[in-house]
Image 1 (cartoon, one colour):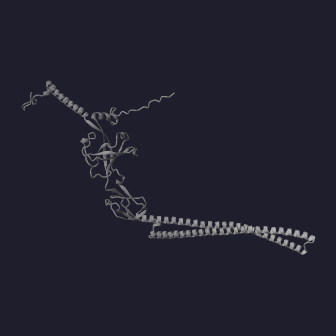
Image 2 (cartoon, one colour; image 1 turned 120 degrees about the horizontal axis):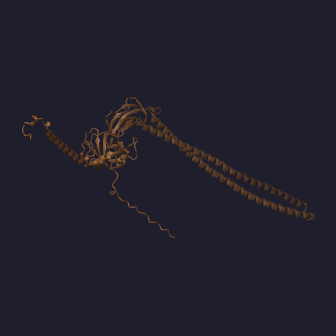
Image 3 (cartoon, helix red, strand yellow; image 1 turned 180 degrees about the horizontal axis):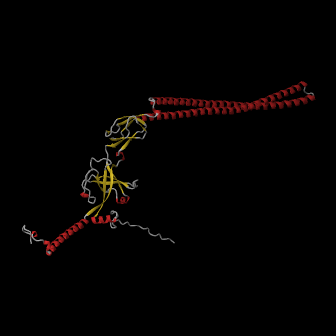
Length: 459
């Protein structure tokens, strides 16, 4: 029954009624099914031995590696009242362009002539410093004059003391001479009296000797009094010298004290002048902050403060600016158990939100619409969300990243690890084992440990 003609026997005879036909048809179906099963099994076994690249997948977003290239808020250094806007959202501004103008809200800065009045105070204090300098010079001259006067006065008194000492020595010599004359006169009176008793001298001669003794006694008494007066004068001159030293010491101390007071007042004036100069500089710098400018070139993406006349505090965010030039990077958070598998320079594959792609994570060469990157940084501490943060930079050697990427775009990242057969990867996934990390023993370098020789004790 070859079924060559168009006329079929099945139109006239029901083949199911014959057992032989039923057995023949059943055996054909079994052979076909068996063949298909064997083919599928062979294909499955072949696929199990295909290479599969182990990988770690995680989600992240586009960012920049440099902090100054990330979106930043424009803030006001001082408190103020918003007077005028010079930009709109989406405008491109160069570094230093004016964003807004604010006016003063603190009453201590309301004076429109604040800088001029502060300058006048500085000039007055500067003149005060000059006056104190002149006073210090005058007091220094006075001190020098008192010092010279004290020196001359002391020398004058010392000379008087020397003169008094010389007079005392002269009076002492005169007193000694008078006393010798008195002794001579007494001897002469004694001899004259003896001669008078014998009748050899007259009464007149005797009385002349007695008169001479009295005269000599008077001279001795006068000379003794004169010597005492000279000694008293010497004592007074010594006391006067001490009084002069104390008097001029007080005057010099008072002059020096006034000089130090003038120096202290001068320093206070200098400090007050410096403080006023500091205030003037602060006032001048504060007025520069009335115009809030762009810290760098970029696009104004969002204005936080709105209406004219709105009062804001210092440090308040006014607008957000996105730098025009930036180097893209990917920020991804990994599980703690995956961190030992990562290292700097590891290859990654990235799929950006909004860019169509066909992803087969285990076959990186078969990916479409996926871009390459390398790990450039791994945090050494865990983040608040319980994951470790890693940064991925572009690997332009394979394919450049899209030019239209924006900061904050979502990313699916695949960190490529070792190549293993598919059966091994299925077995690992079913058993919940981690990806290959530890190297084989034959790949590890054997480290020779040098041991110190034992030290023999010397007996």
